[in-house]
Length: 134
Image 1 (cartoon, rainbow, N blue to C red):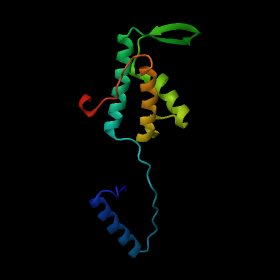
Image 2: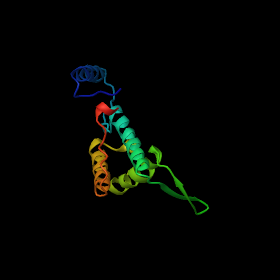
Image 3: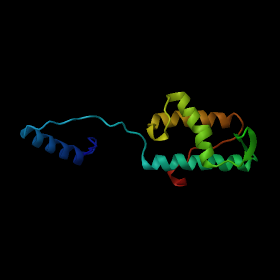
Image 4: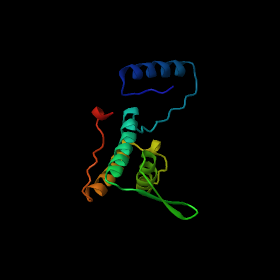
């Protein structure tokens, strides 16, 4: 079972179960679980990829893909391309983490700051989506 020890109900339940296990001479393994991002943050992140791809497409930018026998193919940006060719390389460079699911909130904010600065230096403002945009 997982307990959020910041939640009073979970904390009480946790304490009760620990006392029960101790009184019955049971072995218990206790380990912290690293908090990554919430479902809402995950939705906002993928909305951000969509917003970036839409903005780049509106500006007439194209993604140049060189994966077909070395031939260049110009593609419209998609959220997937933004995630794989913008977000993930920055994330990997900053934290040596391959999966976006392994990022915590602080790390997400650092990647967002890099992307915001990159586009801002080119005169393009793409704010991270608020709850209202989801």
